[in-house]
Length: 206
Image (cartoon, rainbow, N blue to C red; front, side, top):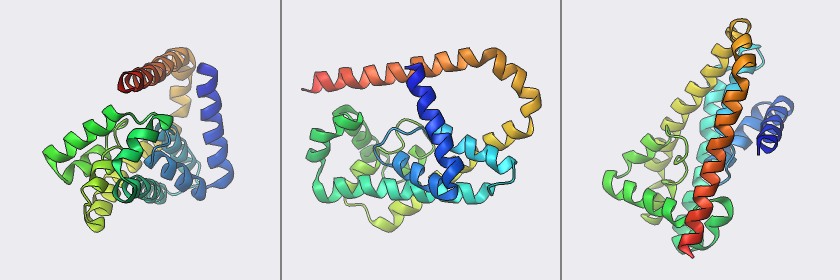
């Protein structure tokens, strides 16, 4: 699993390095849909490139938000025009379980449209609330406005983390080198737990 995570991280970094702003948009569009690509790698690395002078901080955040809109509209459209039964049947292939969908449905029913903004700031459930919004046939303009605002703030914050890391790299490098195994171990444990949890939930839903 550690090797897989390392390869995924390397691919994301190389993709952004080679494709620039377009790569950020594409990866964030995938992250905004059902594809489990970690924005926690995409945006901080982009922030590091901001520090190096290759990217603009606000343009990265803007494109991250635009990408998220594209990906989220894909989820919204499937829910609205194809139906939630399609997601119940095929969502498991991208680790979207019936439990995830039901949880998002409860959040949307309890808090209404503003929950779309709130969940854009929370990793792990960012893309799911688009599903009940699509089922409820929420108007597209406020939906996009909530997604863009929340995604822009989230993208700006994570990108800025990369900028700060770049500015303090000489200070932070010895600590990263000393404790990198701890970070990797926690990442691996978190990913394994997430995958096992979803596989277990999918088995229980059969």
